Length: 501
Image 1 (cartoon, rainbow, N blue to C red):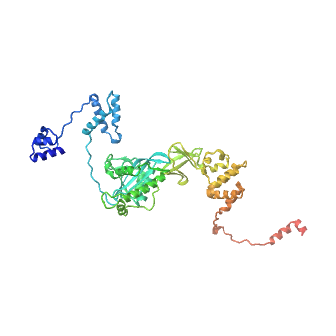
Image 2 (image 1 turned 90 degrees about the vertical axis):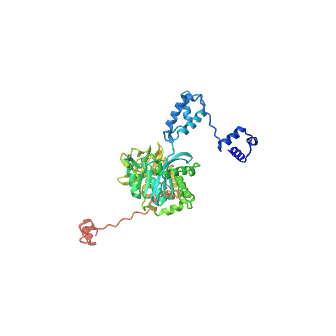
Image 3 (image 1 turned 60 degrees about the vertical axis):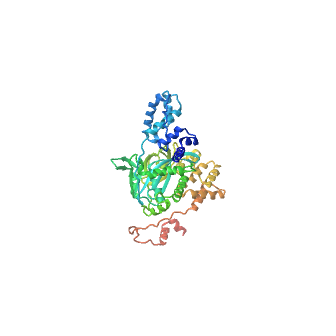
């Protein structure tokens, strides 16, 4: 194009064809073509590309491409996989020929760009929610976590929290933490159609929501709105946030000891991003500045929502009940009975008749047994030998004074009976009081069951006895009188006593 421009300028100044051709080292036919055509650019059609080896397999390759292009982008196979499939059909050519043909054929058959309508939201009008799967390193092990992501549509304020699963207790916990982080929630919540939130999709925009999720939305006073299936643009802000967080927050790979440290880091990052990022509509203000304007429009509740999923489980003879691939202990008095398990995101509460009887931190994985040794202490009354090999007691992390007392008593033949009686005081007095009593007994160098229990009774106050109010019906009509003369009358009736006198 540069040469054509110079030739046109030289000819316009009246120079001859021969002189212009000589100056720019061109043929006179080329200069004549530029002069006659008047074009500022010359295009040369490409020669037809021939595929001598791929030719017999072009129909099959085009069919493969059309099948793949009709699938969602995440489900499509690569050109490498198409090449391998052609090899199975007998193709012996190179991979480059296949990829070159796919570039040409794919460019002619690509989908048209979809057009969208830009959305606008008011202060406190709506927030968007979605899940994403991210890769992190927890405790030195590379794991995939499920991240619940929130976004206030007006201010673009973000919040995200990592979990091990996408379950109803996690959805509840995520909304509770988002409410506390934002200082409230909006009038509407825009969601996809996950089974944890939407029970069934009805006609049009109607949905039947999960019962627990309905209670959650009623408590925090927001209206859930489910998107049209396959129309992710209806919550495009949260879709963009997932990509942005993946590239800016989760890259490079995050490394933490546990998921609690990870979530603390994510909260700090969300605040940092809000203070540093410019708002896309208000260019002169940060996201944090607009969030402070929207804060007063959020709906907030003073009481935290106590939401959980209940499940009935039977306790076996080993005082264990199964849940989610693991086994948890329950108090031994409920062996062979059914208990109610209240499932939270991070713990399991055990209840019977509405009364709490125990609690466990929830463990994710398979095939593990989680014990609370206090649940087995009553069994030591008639079987103290269980201290020797009982699995719940072998894995018990006791305070140092209790462990030293345990080792001290091993010199006696009945150490297991003495230690079991000391441990039996834990449900009554608490493990801290028993630990202090053991420390005092060790300092006196007389650690034994009787000494420890003696110190324990000295340390703890006896329960106050409530005063008894006597009703008028039970009051004495005649108060008793002290009269010692009645004893003299008894002496007179006894002959032996009379002789002595």
